Length: 136
Image 1 (cartoon, rainbow, N blue to C red):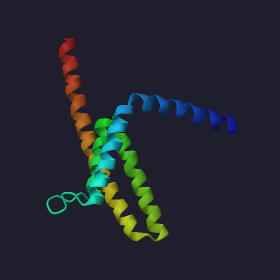
Image 2 (cartoon, rainbow, N blue to C red):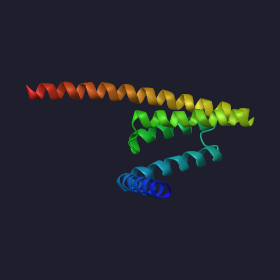
Image 3 (cartoon, rainbow, N blue to C red):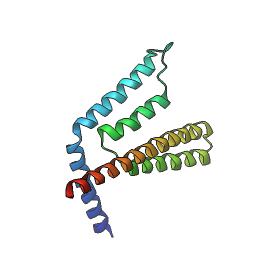
């Protein structure tokens, strides 16, 4: 059992290393944008005109996941499920305010996931139509 778990860990570690090497620039830009948004929020920039709040930062990070880190809709749905599980844990633990916030983040991730799935379906249909036209 221990050897099987170690083998599974090493296989997944290789996959993660390969993914990180392929997406190193995206990871760097993603972290840079997130840090910049958090610093701008803490400094209070654009406060009277455009407030940078945590919901905006979460939404921007979800969108950047798709474009920079090549997340598909199923990855965003997995993230939604993790948010929901964490919200349930916080609710059971009695931290209701954070449970409500995490539920809002889960809803935002669900909206982004559904939007991504719609775009994927439309794009796949147009690609398949082009392939059938070219094969005739």
